[in-house]
Every structure is written in structure tokens, then in C-alpha cells.
Length: 427
Image 1 (cartoon, rainbow, N blue to C red):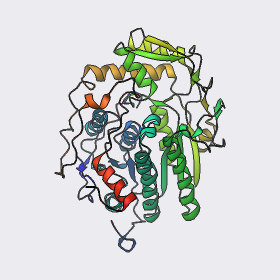
Image 2: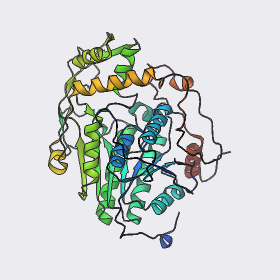
Image 3: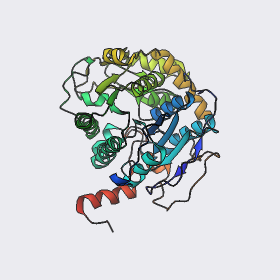
């Protein structure tokens, strides 16, 4: 069960959990009102973006080891919301009787909403994975990226200071490296020239985290993810995209001769790194989480063909200006500080991802009918906001943007943005 809200202070935290192991394919108040129970022995993990790809996997792992998990997700429509609903349904089915599983729907930038979650749920650790993702969409609407990524992270950092959170772990991105010509990307590299608003917001979050560490001694660890893929993955990422298009006999684009190679990281390895970071307060650190073993594009396409059981329709395109031959995450720091050691070969990871995709497709996940909320969830009536456009209207042309990466600005977010900028409500 879960509590649904559109930004009002949470009045409930209806929950879910059971003893079963995960079945993934690998695996408002003022300062004077605040009361923090520093003697509480139970760790309570706030996972923002917990209905998303990485967030749902991390939540599953934490619940399975017996921790209390509080998910907050606004369920934005950057990509097909049915996938996020499906993730929540999966967690509900795996942890249906668990009183340590709580879900809230709302915007992390809503002060009253998120402040009361910290107070009511007695949060001890923050795993901040909520964000507006996507490079191209951030160019089309940079304001919503500043709202969600910068304002949202600042709100959580300040509440973490106020409630004396033990550890604040947040998602950064390999996008902060911009157009680096280096083949091995390291945390010590200078990253002062982001090439998209998305990357700029992620770099801003790293700077804000350092500021809060410097001023208040907070433990803040940023994790730069390198192309995460796997079951329940994001549809705008290359592994999902390639599998989807080959399965549906749609063309995929190959730039150059296919000899370029990139670093892809399987979800289970990422979850392992995230949980290790949550369990290890390190002061202030920024750490790469990648695979460390780049895979060549041409071999990638062949691997998808084998895993899906169909030949790819390949459109040969000229090399992209500025493309580098090889990119790879330097994960020595993650190994040293976290004991991180990614174990999933790309061949196995793609096979498992394709298997999940085919099963999900045969079960109708990608059909036109929307996924409904789990029968285990209790709905709390909320004021109606704008109705979501149909999925067909949201998709546009799949070659226009990265699959379902068209972003419809939520009515409430536009209203709040105008109010902040012009100090008057919209009509």
C-alpha cells in the first residue's frame, strides 16, 4: 500500500514487505518544531526516484535485507509512466506484507511535503536518485531540469542537515565529463565545460554537496553512473533502445564503422556500488560507477541480434563530430573506497535484458493499455490536476527524440516556476 499526494503534507504512509528474496534477473515544519530521535537504532532509507530504473532496484535490495525504505517519486512523464507503475507493482508483489515499505507520490521540491516525510518517517539515510534525465530534453526545457535537479537536491541537502542525516548519497552522471577527449575518465579530471543543461545541473549538485559538507560536516557521496542498463531499464538508453528496435524490426543507427567502444554497466553492479556507498559514510567524495570494460558498437549490435533472435536493420551514418574512439570509467577509486567490483560481463547482461524485454512484451507491458496501480495499493483521494496526454501523443516520432523523451511540463511545476520568477501566480 502507499500514500498518494500531489504536494500536500503526507498524512499517511501506508506500507508493504515480505520475506521473499528479490527475483530480479541477477537480483513543514519550522526549526523550533523539529525533533530528531538520535537514539533510534533503526536505519530508515529515503530513496527518491524509487519508482525509476535504478531506484526500484536499490529499494528492492534494501527491503530484501530487512531495511525500512521510504520511496518518494513524482512519477513524471519523461518516459512512459507505465514502466514506473510496473516497477512499483513489482516491489508491491515482492514486499506486499512488509510494514517497512512506504511509498509517497509527490515533488521533492515541495517543502511541506518532503519536510513532513523526514519528520514522520524519521529518515536516517538519503539515497537521492530522483532527477530529470536526458541530454536532448534538457536543451528543450532547461528550467524544469534546474527545478528538479538543482532545487530538488538543495531541498534534500538542507533537510538532511536539519535532521542530521547519517549519509547522503546522490546520483551524478558521467555526462559531467562533457566532450572529453580522454579515453579513461577519472574523478580528478577537470569538468568545467558541461555541454548540456542536464550535465550542468549534475555538476551543480556535486558543488552543492561539497558546500554542505564543508559548512556542516555532512557525509555526501556523489556517484557518476556510466550507461546503466538491465531489466526494467530506461527506454532512452542505448541497450533498451537497440533491443526494442531489433525486436520490433525497426532500424537502428550505426555511426561510423562501428569500431567505437563505450562503457556499459549492468544494474546489479550499480546497485552493489550504490548500497556500498550508502553503508560507508566517506565525508565528501565523487566516485565513478562503471564497468571498466568498454564494448565495441559493432559487437554490441551483433550481441543484441543473438539475444533477440532477429537480424538488425542497420542505417549506416557518418561519424559524429567530436566522437571519441573509446570511453571508459576509471573505477579504481570505487574499488579502493567501496570495495566495488563489477562482475557482469556485457554479453550476459544484454542476454538477461533481452530476456526480460521479451517476457515484458509478451505480457503486454508495452501495449497501448496503461499499467494500473497494484491491487495492494490504497488510493487516497487527491485534487485533480492535468490529465496525462495519451501515450501515442507523447511518443511523437521515435526518430525525433530518444524514444519517449518528449517532456510535457506538469501544470503545477509551470505554475510554481512562474510564481518564483515573477512573484505572481499564473492565471
